[in-house]
Amino acid sequence: DTAVSQTPKYLVTQMGNDKSIKCEQNLGHDTMYWYKQDSKKFLKIMFSYNNKELIINETVPNRFSPKSPDKAHLNLHINSLELGDSAVYFCASSQSPSAGITYEQYFGPGTRLTVT
Amino acid sequence: AQSVAQPEDQVNVAEGNPLTVKCTYSVSGNPYLFWYVQYPNRGLQFLLKYITGDNLVKGSYGFEAEFNKSQTSFHLKKPSALVSDSALYFCAVNGGGFKTIFGAGTRLFVKA
Image 1 (tube, one colour):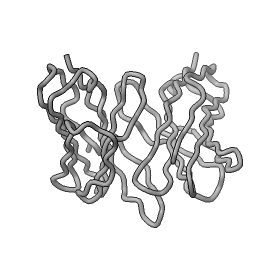
Image 2 (image 1 turned 45 degrees about the vertical axis):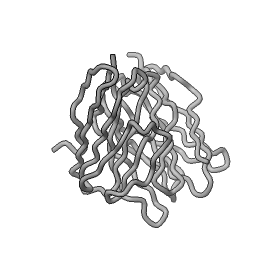
Image 3 (image 1 turned 45 degrees about the horizontal axis):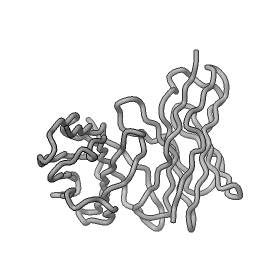
């Protein structure tokens, strides 16, 4: 019954490795997001997809590549991991903005990534 | 450009007392304003939103927020705080598109 789920919950890896985080939502939303929350709890948007199309691509290194195989899934692949990538990554979903109206977002439980 | 300011890193209040968590915003066009709460090791949970209409918005867990256009503020309030309200609270603003900007968060500590 989980609305937005992410796997894995914890991810510990070494510098230089490649890893993926998966996200699935069962809310029927068309829009999905990836956020990064740093150690000071700042929350910053990384990517947003609407109907599988990339809408927002913030100033994120090219090592980060999102992929949306369908509207219910948005995965995040990270190449050549660096120490500074250590953070909590949150997936979220919402109804698509419509007629200028924006809707609330539903967040997953987060994936805590630790790069050593 | 959109921005959100939460001027207080932490708010301390005694259980049973009213609480206020402050938020001011800047956005071109009509603002869509949100409050979210984050408990330890959890994702953010939606509390309430302002889209249009009444300036006083009621949300989950007895929280409410007051939209003030002239002061560009959207302060979160609760008449009587509970220890279980202790958490990290985020204000967020959206100008009507896909990008929502979150404030830095305010940690609420309710003492028994």
